[in-house]
Image (cartoon, rainbow, N blue to C red; front, side, top):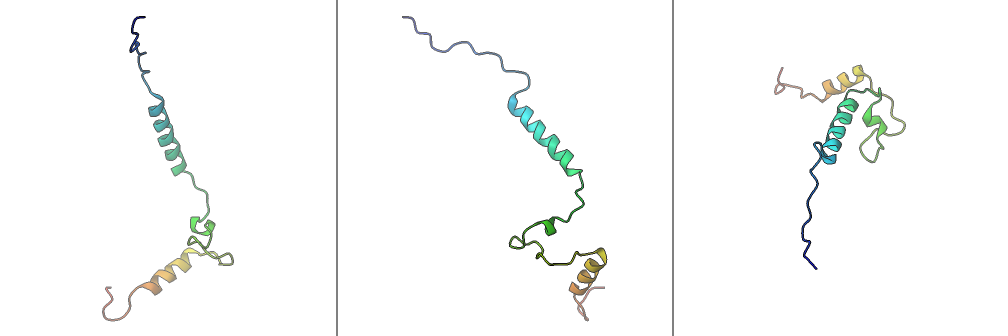
Length: 80
């Protein structure tokens, strides 16, 4: 009985399955990055993760500006 050992291998395809999956992953992430859901991600998170509580009013741009202004340091040491 002769030793058959290693058999001849088939040539690898030009584009492997792994590279196709990587390409598909990159394209889908690129497309998903340009979509706009119109929702606030923090508002969609549960409060135990750090999202807003269930009864919190929505924040507007004016309210955000007021909060940032209130958080700035005040007095002589504050940079102008």
